[in-house]
Length: 129
Image (cartoon, rainbow, N blue to C red; front, side, top):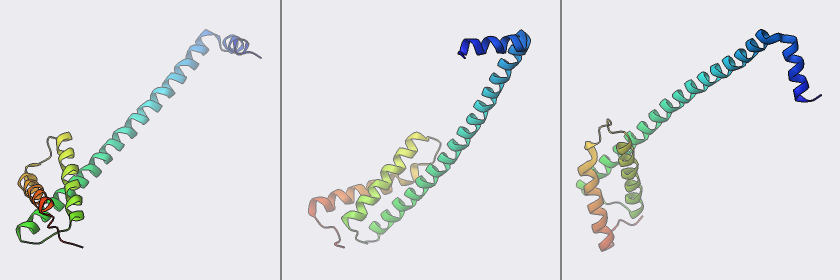
């Protein structure tokens, strides 16, 4: 049986009102499904934002602590510097994408870390692990 024959039989059986009700039912189910998908996407976006905010906050903590340690004369390895530079990138990227997030807290600390890293890299004076 072809699709055309099947459609003809359904139309004859349901009549125009029945067919219209069937079509509306299909579209209503589609709309409800889309509404559910939209709600799920909204919730996923909120969860992603919370995770990203948490990662940025953790990166900020790492940055501030590392800078404090440098100020207090604690030496660090090249690898530890690289990890902290990644934290700076993570934090800065999040702040650029989320302008309402307080980001002025790490500006001087980040500068201190980067300047110290450049100086140590030039002189080759990193702490050896």
